[in-house]
Length: 233
Image (cartoon, rainbow, N blue to C red; front, side):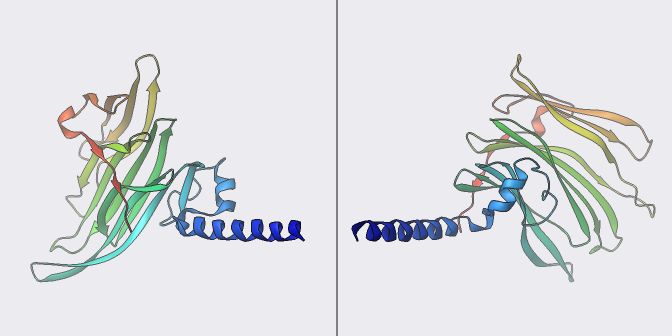
């Protein structure tokens, strides 16, 4: 009888513990998705509100924060609010919160990760149609996130607006993040094609292990280490 009672107590406790655990960051918990993505972490990386698993304690998500209505010079329009969130251990951190035109495509790519750093790139290809003369915009930004202290660096790579009916913009032709263990340095290297002359030029940023900028094609003044905001609901 005592054994049966103890068994009931254990089962009951396990049930309540699981329920409590499910309530904490429940949108980040799907054991089937987790088990699949440990081997394939980029499967859901381009889908709003579907997290991608880097490891059991580190997940990343392109989050849809809803729409926001705006008015400018008596013109009413709506923007999409979105961001990038990282589940680091038990806490969720906002690395990016921004807005984009509803007529847009957000391309989110995982570039690199190790035990200290997670690097990803966000590319927005959008049509700005709430102005008198609509235009196309291509914006590319790369982020390196410090897993240990929840800080990050934001690297602006491209901000290019079309100037004619052809809607041509500068283009990203490829990029990567590498780590030099001997020097303790991370390097972001991208190839950017300028639409005016069609030339492809390298864009390079070198960072130390604390994400402090050592050198940059555009100068280190454009970058700086920021603290990731803890998401509080």
